[in-house]
Image 1 (cartoon, rainbow, N blue to C red):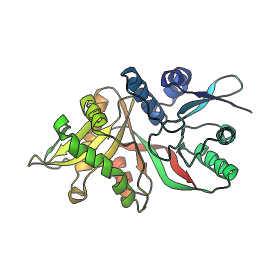
Image 2: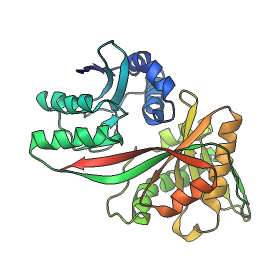
Image 3: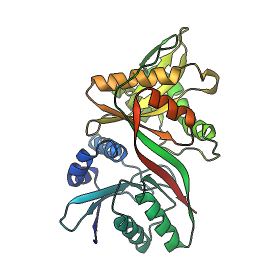
Image 4: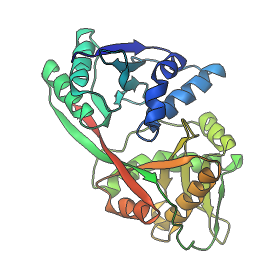
Length: 297
């Protein structure tokens, strides 16, 4: 069956077209729904969308006009990889052809398997390049929180005057997460600045662990709920403070707060990091779907 690819360039237009799909698969769609909702809010507040790269959303329709897949290219960090949700393999291959025909350079793609593998393989073939998996990820959802015995100290929301420390730890997360997984390439993600981090802190989506002396020793972030789902991350403990239970205790506290708000809670893990995968499963998270970040070179 041939599918129709429909590109959109406005977050609200995409949300209107994809609402049934996003609502039916809110956990798998957490990145697309969350990022798009934030970009819509930014536009309403007069904050400009990132520029300098192709910016679009995509819905995939079947022969009856139903939306059976979705994606977006909104990542503000190089190489600005598209993010694809589950879609028919034929549509993923056609998307590669569509972008190639219009001269859109693509050097990476993130999202659900097997769609991203099909897209990356066809993109690489058309460009005379190769592709490889840079990171295997796994999406987990929290079924029932099993909070651990906490270490000395307490979890609390970060304060505005702690923005510098929080920002430094967010910046360190990508590098250290890759190192823990045995990779030289840093885990790529959106870059925060002081203004955006202050907004996150004011929204109540940044938690810290404060030890018994009052020192900050850990940070856990989260997204605001989109279609009823909030995503935990990043989760970062500086090297000198690891192995003391701060990550598990803070993730548990943040998850409990989000559950109290009525949200479902999910998170991503790097499959190459056995420590974090085991930790989250002890807290009550179960795997939902495997995803991947691929590079085309």
